[in-house]
Length: 314
Ligand code: CUA
Image (cartoon, rainbow, N blue to C red; front, side):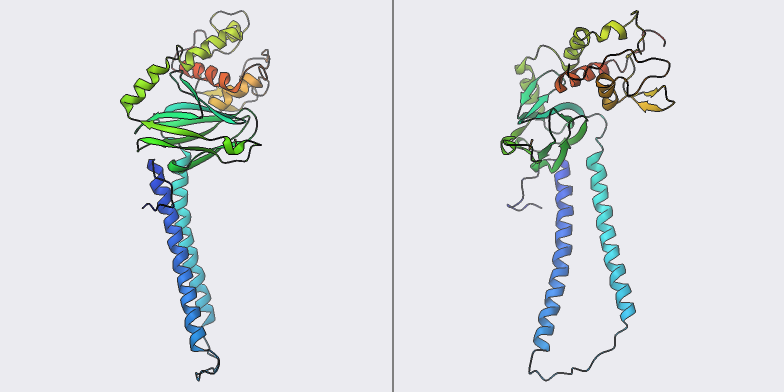
């Protein structure tokens, strides 16, 4: 259901979020109506000067208390379950989504597509495809808000947050920053442009990025000297990176972590934090030497190695 006071519904999740909102609104309205109707009735019935029976009544108070407490508990638990269902849906990106990187900085949104296309304050996406955003901030906390899609997620420096959606309406919709982030916070706005898959392909090729995200990452991997230790038969013994992404990694302290984006990011910026079992920490920190966008490019490259088998055994 849409009213003109609501933003348009442009994603699959939007309708479900609105339904919950309407559900809560209706429940509150029903209670409000009941309370005010009874109030009006008693005000009129027992008003001053009216000849009515004013003797005290004896009610089964315990029964009434227990009944209304249990009834409201039940109603609220239903809303809780409904909300939790929506929350899990929104928080868990389904597999097979196309991945787009978002970096927030004072005061703009920087977007990188896997094909290498980049844009600022604009996000072009194809209609009907699952899109997963991996987001981080270069400075302070921002929040990536797509009102017509009914999704909003904090974008936090030092970590990756994700958000996913499936656009089901062609058109141009709002991007807002919804976390106060400094002087020009209110101007940290943009557009998400939903195109037909064919138009999106045309748009991608028009941008002519030259290098895909993973290719840019590979170039950085060489330029920053990572390949010197991590590739093939290098002299320094560093853990192989082929086939690493998404796999469990046993650490020196007996812990086992999953090689996800956050793990790769930490290993590049803070190599001493988690050391792979059987290795010593010989790696310098790249903190301050690599930008957030470059980090995402290197990670895209490491992800692309995820399906390969290691060149050498550790
Ligand atoms: Cu970025 Cu507010």
